[in-house]
Length: 305
Image (cartoon, rainbow, N blue to C red):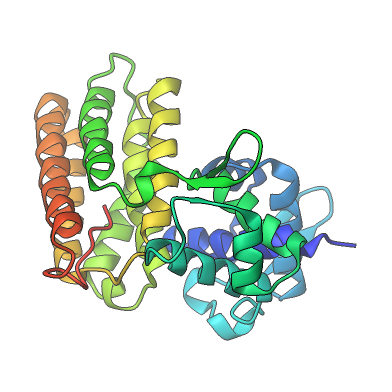
């Protein structure tokens, strides 16, 4: 029997990755790839694949694993029972309340149990998921606390400054090796965004495309410390993607800059590429700073890169 609770939590994110990578029918679903991207073990990913097979989105072949049955463009929200999943609905409700300042920086389970009137086990599942996403932490003794990153604009700025330090540096690693197939796929995704996907993909899907692009740039360095660092940053930034709608106009500029960055790297102009990437992150970070400091002036314009 499939353990559906955790699988249902992970399934929307797996499907977002399938869409973000523009995967086609017949492509293999590799456990290690999804497990690393989502920061979990291979076992729950295997259960997600089994769910996708139940929903006729994937097929299992004996001794070969799971393969996508429907291409990314064919998968519709109505083809899988995720929107009505009570756990996901409750999780998003708690997220909205955290980001809206409805939940204090330090809180006890009893406070949330009174607020939401749900079983303690259900609440603990949500809190443990938020803890795995580095958004809350259990305090010694009793109670929980929000991580500073959630509401602290200065911490957001520091996150971008940290990325400005590690991502360009990764480009300059002596062992940097271009993954030409992955670069071609990333270029295709960025162009598809410019050709219209920007206006049709969900916030989660848009974030996933951007996060995977930056992770690819760093992965080619072969430096495991840089790779771990960018994955941790993406985990933190994923949560903030819930905060508001996406500034799709600015995102078009980001896609154009991503394509130019690929051009520079593939032309073996890595010094120039590193400088360009630094400026790219600096500009996005400045816009992010304006958004966090003056949210009233930018209610619908968060940055997703």
